[in-house]
Image (cartoon, helix red, strand yellow):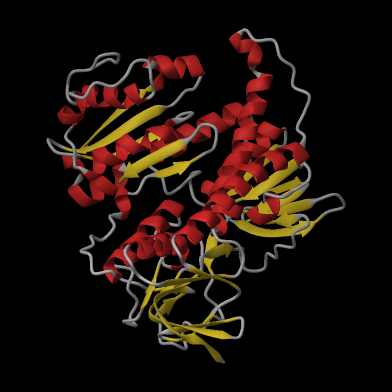
Length: 462
């Protein structure tokens, strides 16, 4: 294996997704000499197969719904159907523009970018394309891929993953979606807007089971109203081909038939065969284990993003990458409070949250120490204009800070920024209540919820 000249980089990064490229950008900004290795395209899953393209599909679905429902707003319009080629052109245009911008940013920071499949060859080197890249420190950021269940083969034909769903040249007439988490409900929402008949199968008791139960129930109510069917509380047993599609059987014997089965049971880490264990890195079920500073048990190796068992969110990966870069540059860093990371599910209606659920708060602080308040969007002018229903739920430690903000409603993902400040700055309801929120906005609903929790409700009943 030939050494890449005599260069020893300060940091060699294996993987150019959210966590990897964020670390590269920040490390180079801090004066470190960086090599970034990526086997596919810089930007990784989020930019090319996840966050960005799925949200483009969801926005196209929103436009379709608006065209169908335009008469409700006094606008005469007709809906003639979905042109998937046009949808993909729009989606791919968004991705392409961001990709070119990111490529330019990487080049402008004088990062050594290496395209090829890398493998960790020692605690201080990565081999790629017949070259060995030496680093004083190695960052593992190889991300994740869609996973399946034992005995269920994703074939890309009738049994597909989210990767396949993103490039389908048609809208399926019907679909069963296995998994009611973020990926499952987002595709259910988009496909329903495109005109598909959709059924979600979730083994746990509620859709979006990682959210506060109230948010799950509100989403389920909204999905029923939209005609999105779902089965919760019973696990998948098997899937088999039929003459025209797929038949899915649940553990209770119930069967569902559809044109396609989308397997959306989460994402698993990309770590097999990459030399991690040979280099002595501690692993668990394919995940690389790291401490609160993203440091592995090997002193010269760190890991970030979907590869470690933290939140599988692009913005969490960004933060982890920045943390590692700053730590290696000698800056004082603070561990990430993952409860304080905002979470948004971009279905219709959106589900957004930051902090902990009511159930978790009762577990941590005791049931008698937890206060909750629900503010219905029916009292919010902007939400009425948009014809969206939903709620903002606050979870407070009695006489103390707000420790959870849980929101359901169209566009409420855009309000999670203030919610994150409220949680992370340990704000008291009265402190938020004294801030003046613009009228009429949905942001105002967040202010009104805190007014009510502070004991001085305005557009809501005591």
